[in-house]
Amino acid sequence: MSGAAAVLKNVSFRYKNGDAGALTGLDLTISEGECVLLCGSSGCGKTTVTRLLNGLIPHYYEGELAGDVTVFGRSVADTAIEDLAGTVGSVFQNPRSQFFCVDTTAEIAFGCENMGLPEEEIRERISGTVADMKIEKLLDRSIFNLSGGEKQKIACAGVSAMQPPLIVLDEPTSNLDLDAIDELRRIIRHWREQGKTIVIAEHRLGWLNGICDRVLFMENGCVSRDLTGAEFFAEPTVSLNTAGLRSVAEKRNYLESDTGVTAIKPFENAASIELRNFTYSYGRHTALDIPELEIPAGSVCAVVGHNGAGKSTFVKCLCGLQKGFKGSVTSGGKACSPRDMRRISYMVMQDVNHQLFAESVLEEVMLGMGNEDTDTALEMLRKLGIAEYKDRHAMSLSGGQKQRTAIASALLAGKKLLIFDEPTSGLDFHSMELTAQLLSSLGSECTVLIVTHDMELIERCCTHIIHIENGSVSI
Image 1 (tube, one colour):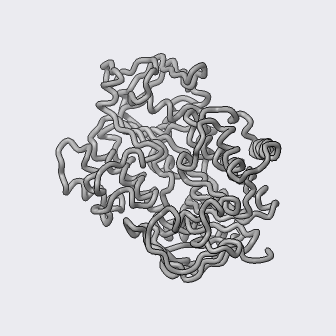
Image 2: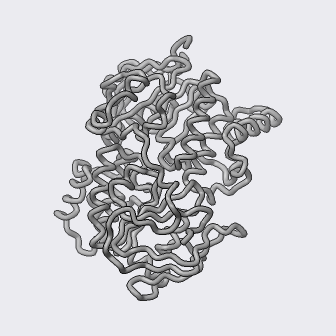
């Protein structure tokens, strides 16, 4: 490590629309070639640090900034964001927010083209990046037909092809399965071998053991602990959980479970939601082909599978949101049309930004209530730990806080079928536990489906597992 890649001196920042992610008097030096993990509870300031490093603050996100931020000796405030692009590469929690093209190959090339590189060099960089990341099957695909995890891989590939000396990643594994996380781990090791400086803001921690030189634990906009990687990953699980962090211990991989609907906890309700000849295609590509499936009514059912297996397509068809699917659904012995399914179901999507509309968090969670009951809504916000934000605009919250707002809306909607697509992506340990407790308590009131890669969540709240691979469920 020959010098400083980034220096933050007495940096304070407060977003224009709120306090979540605010920083106060932060001093931080990141050396060239270091791999640094930023961890802490939702809203502690992790993402804000990444935005300072890549220039999104102050050039995109408005707010009050004090102090100095330099990257490889250049003042971030005095450098146009487009001039920083070749120096700092960014992978966001929601990769859709950084896409500019409609097909994958063009997206990987986009950053290199903006740098003005010769066409032949761009082709060589794409070829090398695709081989390194083993994503040949994702080339020449529509961005719109990718799973969340596949989009994340394309975002990583686009950054890797630009070959910046500093790479910042914000919750890069939030939508990845365990195999994909292993691939990302390998890519980060490759970046390290190239001498890259890497900064990762993350809640899922175990996969970073052996990769990070340094771990910074953030609280209330400051670094409260600065540990070596070895020191941090030797911390006992109880200490990490108490601090609001996820365990670093290896969890059971439910992708290795039998396919079909598998009971993982005692369950007595014999009623079911029955699916027959459930199919969907993206053009000529068959994305879903399920001859029959019974989902126990009143269950809390995890929907698992590798990235691109068809999980999100499955739940969108089930709740009547995906036009053009074929098949029948019977609930309680009654045939249900797609319109019926839309009426009795509520879905919280991976990207909750698309379903937050109201002027305040309290108004947001009350939108779907049949009978508006402020006291009940406030109690739900308290259970999810976001009551203090009731008067804030939901779009001013951190990613994890937005996620909990959307979950509260679903729980208050009074529907018989609740579907959550990666509900704990971006959630710290305490928020994940609160969410798991609420989802677990719903079994007597409705049926819950959870599309997830979060093994800790499955262990805490799910009664059954549906394992989908290649669009099919083996019975």
